Length: 118
Image 1: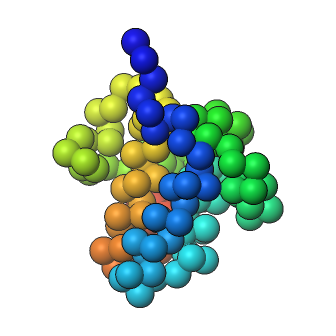
Image 2 (image 1 turned 135 degrees about the vertical axis):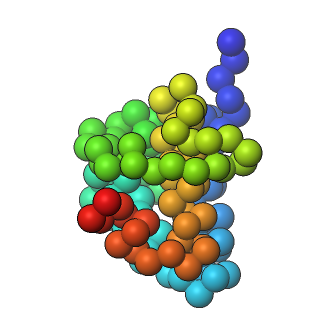
């Protein structure tokens, strides 16, 4: 079975869309970065390195050694699919990120987005 084309897209090509979506709703790039760091365990410097290198999305998630265990608390629908029901691990991680950015753009508080006290 062929890989989904999103796996080969560079993280750097998707990242500006996340930032634009957030900023359109009066949220910040800093908040987008915080979500990415929370989800992946990367430092800000590591995120920036991946952006500069043009790392593909599959590798971006594969190299994240400290994926946040609280990400499993993320529930809901992205692109018509329940994130908690996605069986392919990399696609689920991508959709977790999409869901978190959606929540940011909808005005949800950062503590809720980052699943604090849940």
